[in-house]
Length: 524
Image (cartoon, rainbow, N blue to C red):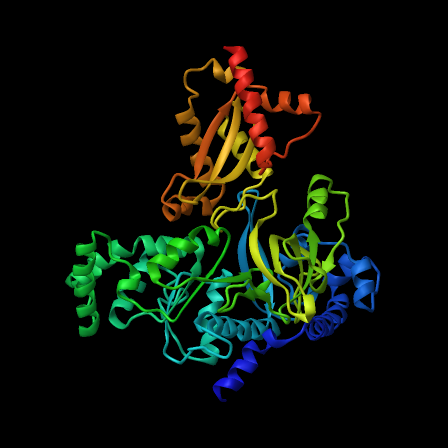
């Protein structure tokens, strides 16, 4: 195939108008509805109803969450599913309460995923429409986790179409720790260079910050390098010494493409751009959703792939109502109805025999461009829904999980509010505002230091992914503020309102802190 034909095959969806895009969405969704509705999984959720059209299906099937699928999926029985799964993928669910979620992938899902992965690789390397640089043998510095995590699919799927070299292959070296895999990746990079870099934003930042340390070992004779790389290393070292700075990846490598995904990826975008000399392109993929979308050379926002999922969107106001009142049924709109500047919780129906239909995945997007004049909408990822704290893509902290950590700790902690906040470097962390019961206040043992150390221990015990945060973020991911006892309840009583215990709005949080300061002054 010619370069123009390859572009049309993999990236031609960008030229669709919204009418053509919706035709693909609806046609694939109608096929999926017929397949899914006949399966035991579909029948159990439809409760005897048999919708025949997309409109009937949206009216009949309520929005779903993982709890609606868990009992059937954890049986891993293909006879219960719409199509035979080729592989089961895992991810974190809710820490120690419900450690993992699993998702079945059919062959058709994998084929769609592979097709869209190639589109992503082409788009992150391009400088204009029709431009890309993707060839067999290209070398990928890859920060993805091995199977059974979704990122473990990427090397094997791409290699089905075109043989690449992975630095390193996360599945081939799955027995190594993350840091050991990255050390091996740097050694491989010194031997032959890097063409592409793919990772979650937090992981990419960790790799980048470790770069000077790694190459000081790799460039000092411990690792074999090509003569050209050795010359480049020595020149870069002298230049950096003159400029009084640490060596950067861009001093040694000229990469073709840089793709970043994951929660909080935007926090690291500027520093990653400076370090690598290339602006990371935003990508979105997930365990339940597969490959969702990719930004382009224009950096105007992601266009969602039309053939991976059928998309619905819950407007922010509707989302907040439903989070405050579980009995409230939020309205959804389709992708041709979203409005620029608005935030939405995305709802997915996985195509090609997928299990999840009208599924609230828990992600929030902002619409950057709407379908004015027939153009395709563009989006950027915002964060998880407000009832979940996701730090750097490595945690799923909820009110239930924090309450369980507090119960296990037996530290005499009363009421609390937990929020994701950002330090002066725009690095995310978990900030807990908590009260200590009067009984515990009378003990000299319960100090802020003790609280911090003990809670960190229990978070690590309760959520295995929390262990990686301190290393990845290079800060203490948990920070505490102790409020006078009764502050939260007193504030709620004064305002005749109920605060969210997770991610309270800035306005109400600041008002609460002012109330707590006043209460503390009165007590003194």
